[in-house]
Image 1 (cartoon, one colour):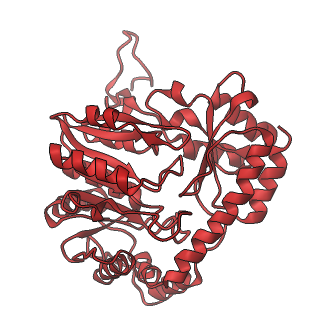
Image 2 (cartoon, rainbow, N blue to C red):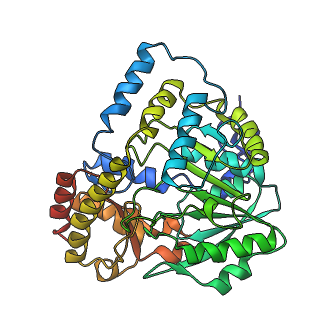
Length: 400
């Protein structure tokens, strides 16, 4: 048997070969920082998961489903009662947006699988996919795994707006889709109706799909009408794939129940790919999802208010020690300029020093950019934590 590693001739053996696609990106920096935080017993403000319980209604429904032996496969593209519950909740939240649960929803293993299933179903090798940056780290690899080329358009601080001319120039005859994430990770930007109208006009002109990640739809601080789903914008109704999940809204990031909403022809393709990726999402947790969809409107108002409180604990603490940032309008992240705190502008080394020396974990900004140099002076902190956790992080950060 040959030894591991390159042979004496310098060639890589068949057992050592990896695909060209896999060689073009690294493992998740965000999840790597969580592992590092655990090693150093640091307060984890890196990965965006709550350290507080989910609503009791969800736990009770999940327990009941297990007691009722809901242990086998659901329908591949989602249990019928959960799909109906998703459609009903969307109709209540956004009057006029009517979804056919039989033909326009595919339930997936979280929004992460929803995104890659969508890309694999609707994007071909040689296509281009427009991605706003800074971006959530999955979008570029998802496009690459689909054989497409990501084309990046800058969101610029302090308000994280895009330049319309730059966006227009990004569209080409090969453009197949544009990824929109609103509210936005990592900046906390909420795309305005005017910005979505610009995107809509370009997508109609070039016959391009919108793939919109709306995992933070209810976590914003702008009041009624703050979040506008792209699928409700004129021109985008029949060319939008909306991606969502239970994870963030209901504090169950480990349950991995997500979904896509799209016109029937697009949904058919997504369902086929989803079937061969994961077969189906966890059946008892889809049953619990029915309870989540039935929560009253007051739940979302209260949740957003509590996240605002958390934001307003962390942001002053960050400003006090010298981070520079624009307070987020949505989601639960703060993307900071490190400035004088990191004269070397080495975000990776700085983030590691924070974990090991200060006891607080963030995410180095370079992981959110196609050109890492753009994020060298940035770090992202997440605040889906108990108030006491955020106060503990603030106390540790004062050592800076």
